[in-house]
Every structure is written in C-alpha cells, then in structure tokens.
Image (cartoon, rainbow, N blue to C red; front, side, top):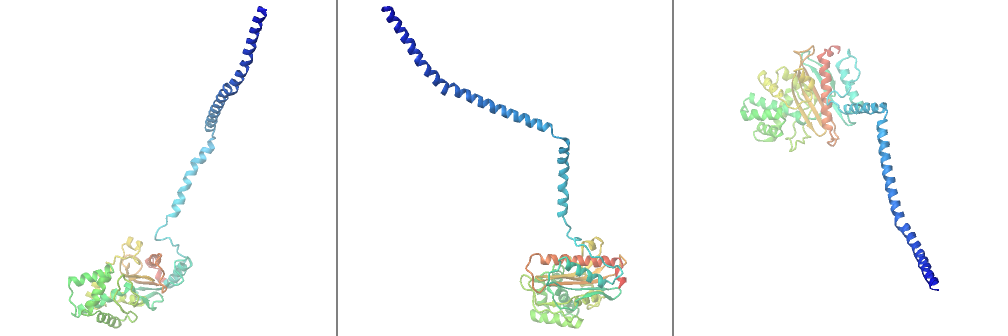
Length: 365
C-alpha cells in the first residue's frame, strides 16, 4: 500500500503538470512569438520591396535608349520662336499694300488709307484730312478732304504765333525775352498756359480782343476756315477752335516762301517750329536720314494731327513738301489708346509718303 500511494501521488503530480503546461504553450504561440514572427516578416518584405524598386529604377535609368535623350535635348529650342513672335516693332508693323509705282501720289495715299481701314487701324467714326504739297514744284500732290473743318486742338497755335509777330512787326508789341520764352513754350512744347498768356497780350489784357485779333489776321492772310473761339481750358480740353488741313498747308507754304509778314519773321517762326519736341510726321526713318521738319502737332480726345514742312529736297531726288494730316472722330472715343493708335497711323502715312517722294515717286502724277 505505501508503494501504491507513493506511485499514485507521483502519477497525479505528473498528470497535473502535463495538463497545465499545454494551455501555457498555446497562449504563448498565439499572442507572443507568432506576432513577433509576423512583424519580422512584414518588415523584411517591405525592405525587400523597397530594395527591388530601387534596383528597378536604377535599371530603368541605365536602360534609357539614346533616342529618348536626344528628343529631350531637341525639344528645348522650340520655345525660342514663340518669344520672338510676340516682339513687334512700334513702326513698320503695318504691311503696306501693293501699289503701282507709276501711279500719282494721290492714288497711292488713297490706297494706303483704304488699306489701313481694312486692317482695323481706323474706327468707323474716324475721318481723315490729308494734303501733300510740293513746295519746289508748287503743286498739290494729294488732297483728301482738305477743306473739311476740323477741331484744331493745338494746331491753332501757329496762327496765334503769327498774330504775335504781326503785332511785333507793327510795333504794337515789344519783342522781349519774356515774350520770346512764351512763344517758345507754346510752339516747342505746346504749353497751354503760355498760349493763353499770349492771347491776353494780343488783346492788351483782354482775352476777347486777343481772339478777335487772331481771327482778323487769319482772314486777311488767307486762312478762311481757321477760327480761335476760346482760350485753352484747364486740362487742355479744347473743342471750340477750328482749322482745316488746307489752311495749315497754306500757312506752311507761305512760311516756306517767307511771305508770312516778312522774311525776317518767317525765319523766326520757322526756327521755333523746328524745335517742336512732339514727333508724328517726323518718323524714325526721317530722323535717321537727317531730314529736318518744321511742324506743329495737335491732340485732344477725338482729334490727332500734325502739319509741317519736311525739308528733304537737298538730299534726295524728292522735294521739300508740306504734309498736313488731321484725324478726327466726333464721337470722341474713350481713351483706350485711340490717340496713340492715331499717332501710329500718322507716322505710318508720313513714312510712306516720305519714301515715295524720296524716290521721285511724285513724277508719276
């Protein structure tokens, strides 16, 4: 019996140890090592994937065919022409129409104006007056609406200058440095304050009498459609004063012939007009050729003009000539570049006329 009890106890202990050891191992495999093993496998897989991607990328870089590399190198210069196409010169961008070289200048100018209208450089309400007068041959080469009355803007100022020198010649005004300074400012830089000062001086302090004096002399000298009706308002918005391209052409013709008052005063006026700093009919080509221009510009909303003498006779086959251009739109377009575009048109027409006369083009008419 003691042996049996001893054997039974040992057997019981062993069975209990066996029984409790199984759940512990199962729990340990479920929550412990299996999780660790899974995380290790996941990390190893992610690392291998990254390595494989890097290797694939390196292989792709190494295996790029040379033809693809050449295409990338050749594609970069294609951006250069696009930049060049955007750059357009301010002058010369208008392509001239085809004209018959043997045709009269009148026909050429009409063709140029139709061309400018067809390509949109004239608004529907834009009107133009233009005259070209050969000062050496004493003949009109082109005349388009020359007698149509236009708003003068600052184109009235040469006629005011004429009245001032007329009174100086008759000793009704004294030619002082102050008077000369105001004359220079009125003509060379188109100063409106200087203009109003001179009108007052012409009327002995009375602006109305000054206006009467200018208009009386204009009628006497043969400028029937030129009228000074008001002082230049503040801001330069003058719409009452009037002139025509024909009156402007006649003024510069008499100036050239030194018949405005006298040769002495004609020369004084010509010298002032040569100092005009605003260039429209004096194009970059005319400047480059060393041609002098005695002119006066005029600009206000809805009106842009320039009239003067182009002295080219001594340098080319052409002649000294008067060019008078006035562009008017009575609707007074809102300032969205209208005035600047009309200045461009005046320069274009002036340059085309200059080139034609430079080459003796007027002989065809």
